[in-house]
Image (cartoon, rainbow, N blue to C red; front, side, top):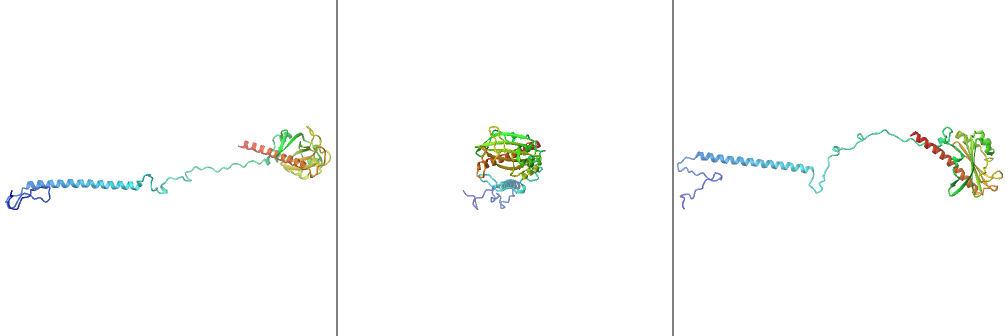
Length: 294
């Protein structure tokens, strides 16, 4: 089929940019202005739709970028989910000395000194007797057990001493003299505890006592008299307001020599035990006073 000169004419499509309108200037016909105006309006509407749609896409893209930036700033997407960085230390709450409760400094009072109680009659007020200082029927020092004999208590100190000791006790105002005897394997020892009002008096009595004075050995309660003649071993010491003495010897009247270690050991053990008992007396009173003061 032939369409005449110039080959087939293209059909005009308003949506195709390169299509041409179906008129020819050679025909002498005037353009259809109404159709042209309608086609132009249609193209403009299509452009506006495309522009609006493109703006929405751009807005969405910007919003996505911001969201991704916020997530990235908060941390990475590792499996543990732990943050890779922490805020500066200045932004973290912390305990400070200003926020902590404060208390007034306190300190426990020093423990009371037992010697303060056994050094003066005004404080040393606990019950006192030969039985309180030497309780029970025996005592043990190390592995040695001593059996307890008789006890005695007198306010006339001079009557329970011999040699030069009575004068020393009287001069320093001895108020009581307590005695107790212990025995072990044929050796006996009497301990005499002279009581004074002050530590100074007891110390002076100790200093003035000499080898010619001693506490009278105490027999009885199954222990026969000893050290009423011959040679016996004696000791003198003081602690607090107490001066204490020992007289040790053989029950058979044998003289004591420097080789008789059993006699020396017996006297030393009883002197040590006496010291401990006086100290315990002070400790008990110091503890009781501390409990009252609390």
